[in-house]
Image 1 (cartoon, rainbow over the protein chains, first blue to last red):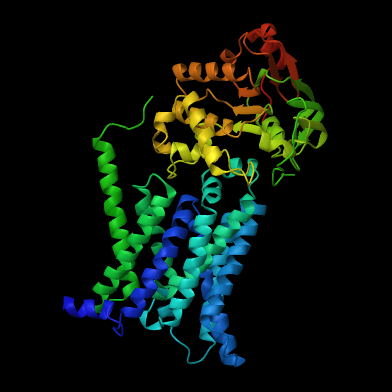
Image 2 (cartoon, one colour; image 1 turned 90 degrees about the vertical axis):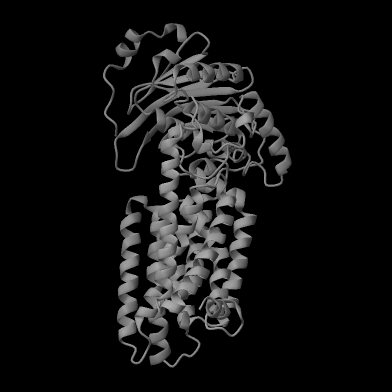
Length: 288
Length: 248
């Protein structure tokens, strides 16, 4: 059984080979962007962006069916919707912080509602369950190119702007006083989040993609002293969760997305408990 | 209302702070400050004191260029505050800084160099950061997580961050709040030493902060009154300002 799973996962042509590659490549972007999202506490924005992706997918398949636009793919719709949602949320939270939460929630629910209505009005199109909860059968080799490009972008932004993003995420007001365009970096983070979310959406689905974006980073944050440590550890954790999750879901005939997320959540809870216990049993490291 | 960025590359040589007839009110709100005029000399240590809601923080944010006065003129180092902010060191209250963030002491200090000069080499900043950390006796903490430090240690790290850009003016918001008396004394000694080199303006609500080593005391309660430290007594404070104003 194990040998069969390993063959399907790691041997080209295996059922799980492409999802495995997509997952591992996406983990790089997830590790980098997820660390910024959790450190900057942008999780609620990321949740809204990921859910609003459904509007883009719905609109893309609707237009493709009714207007016969073959180039209007769900992936294109997802990217556009995610970027538009990121920019709306970003502009509103920057210009009117007190409206941030309500607008973020509105973008999320309107995005999902529009998406579901448009999918319903597109005859013969695929079930929304695959989009919401992930379906490895939807993953194709073409996705590798898309995710490769997003990886390159995440690595470029994450390393070239590392010190500046670190300063902005740690103390935004001070970074502004040092002359950094903090609003621009905030929007950059949201757009990077949007692109990354779409990259991994097909494996774990819209609903659970946010868990895979944040849980490895939250786990890494328990141990990391530096943000880049957190990025490396969460990338490796994300790769491990995707690989083990795919491997477990195949022989047990369970949906891979929920298995991956359950694994990530369990590891996070166990690590949180262990760290809490360790801190309780040991005297505080803080000195007077 | 809010200045977005700080402009770099200007050589500024005016008096640290020159405020003339400044007033400020938030949109649709009450007037927070009215007819504020004062001046700070170079290499001086001034304390800004006043009741909660009196406008201390608003005045500090005006000096930092984060807010714009609704009337009057305000110059920092001879330039409008938003143009001077790269020459101004700012130390927020350590409790205002994000908790649980994965960043070391050295990285926090180095964020004080960011944006100072895009062409300034990182190595120069690292060298300066080491010097400052040595001076503030936090060099042994440089690889420690900022989150794991005590209040006094955090305060010293934030002062180091403010100093690493070699500012001409240092603004501090309640530097001795939420630290024990020993650390408060240490921070105070440190600031008195720095006052020989740069202008320092400290916000405090603690009357004990006022002593003869200060050059000037600013009482803020809707407006500003400048006094010599020797003129300040608790009775005078109550006589001048009475009950604290309501926050607006």
